[in-house]
Picture 1 (cartoon, rainbow, N blue to C red):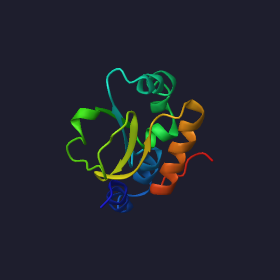
Picture 2: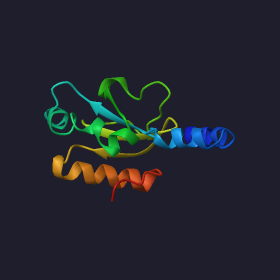
Picture 3: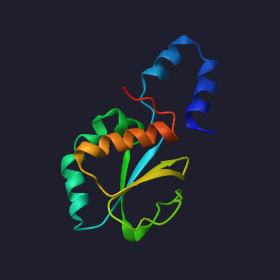
Length: 129
């Protein structure tokens, strides 16, 4: 059962104050795993162009970033649908399972749109638009 469902049920019995407090919290429903490789020029570009802003966005709040080395495979408790062969590969995870991925870094102009599309198609992310 998803965390948000469990919290909603628990808060439904605690009254309006708890519901108001809960609504103000940004809950991460998913996680974005960046599969990285030392020296990868596209990984470096992503980290310079997107990395500093990512945690401050709605997308970053909804799907916090975890960076893993390509040699390490999926982190404990996660399952990738298939191995990552390219770096960077951005794998959207929810409840430990891969929902989708973006292979490669298409540049700053395209990354945000691709990630938002992936989140909207695969999760309950609403976003600003």
